[in-house]
Length: 445
Image 1: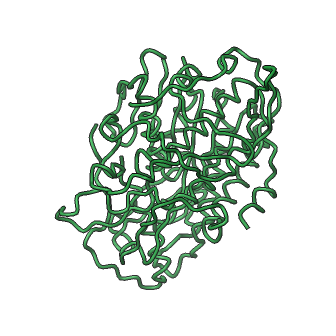
Image 2 (image 1 turned 30 degrees about the vertical axis):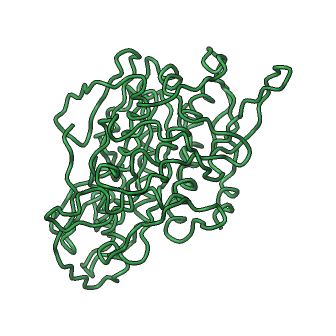
């Protein structure tokens, strides 16, 4: 697999006329997103989880409240309702279940052990929901559930990070074959031959039509034209063939960008032209997700399930990204030690609001939407980023700490624990997706 370089304005001094230092630092910090890029004990599950069960006719809603399977002393099987996305990180000495030596899918910038990270505790945690257990990922069960199906990851490099994790988690059973028809290294297609299961990463960091207008735009970091009401055909023309689509987007929206609607310039984010209104990142973020969901609901031949993987916060501390800011913590936060607020809360709530609108429309169009809510669990893992361990310290280049992507193995593997649990619930037809928007908003205040 060819590795992708980090696309950063290395070694350049930035002149931030007309824009605050903090705003610029936030925007440029996420330039890391241009970077790219078994051992696994099989866990015993009740056989009925793999049986052909009828699908529930109840529609999805905002949050995944799983029906946790319980078996009493008399072998009576019942279910317990549980929001799998609310909980704590607890020690898991059995982890990790693959290594950077056993999985070739790890790109250098997430290969923390290769580049000398001295601690290993960040790999030895699991997510424990408050009211149930979330099983550790079972690769055999996952592959049986998706036999004959296809899955697309649509979005940015953090989405690709999740796909890399999935390949590594499945590697105890089978490695996929590269069946890509394009030479574009940002979008690759893989097939699990023995299961007739296909996964593909489709590069679309803005989810809408976008063009790089000037590689040396404001502050030398590039300038993008975003057509906020136009579909990105890189993925909207392809997803008809997929059974599952996971979309994501976040950090790229902090880049300098010009906003177009109806082919007219309507505003910008971090632009130096005083004649253009700076509408800010939240404007483009909302519009982009609204257009992406509108695209899905307009596709007559798409019969799959769309998962929104929610925003994953970064963890820069003690300085800006280019002034020594880093993520050096060595354990997860407890739920009482941190909370979602400010910019991250605004982005998260924007996603939920647009998701709910899309789901409401989907009832009329026959589309299915699910919320893969990784935000709370991810917020609590400041210890899981590559930091300075995505490169050799003696490399002859100006390099920065990566507090955006995730080490592999690492916390991001839990996103696929969530995904498997949700697929199991799809198979069982036992959903309770009714946690309301106002309830989830209160959680983070």
